[in-house]
Image 1 (cartoon, rainbow, N blue to C red):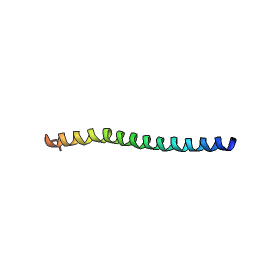
Image 2 (image 1 turned 45 degrees about the vertical axis):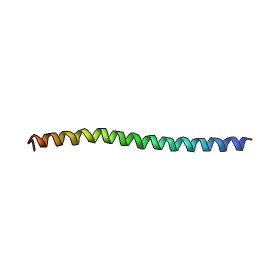
Image 3 (image 1 turned 90 degrees about the horizontal axis):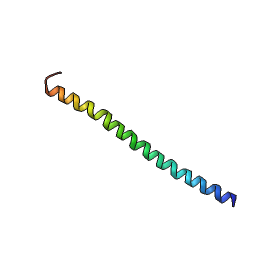
Image 4 (image 1 turned 30 degrees about the vertical axis):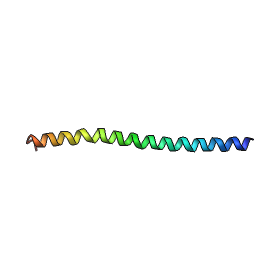
Length: 52
């Protein structure tokens, strides 16, 4: 019985690691979009106004 419980814990930890990896990747994507997006928008705006 103890061996079965340890196997179940291992599968649960593997599943939680996969979910954690997905949330980390989505968090990186969100930070990239909201971090780089406004910078690109500002550059385009300033370029259209003749700043560069």
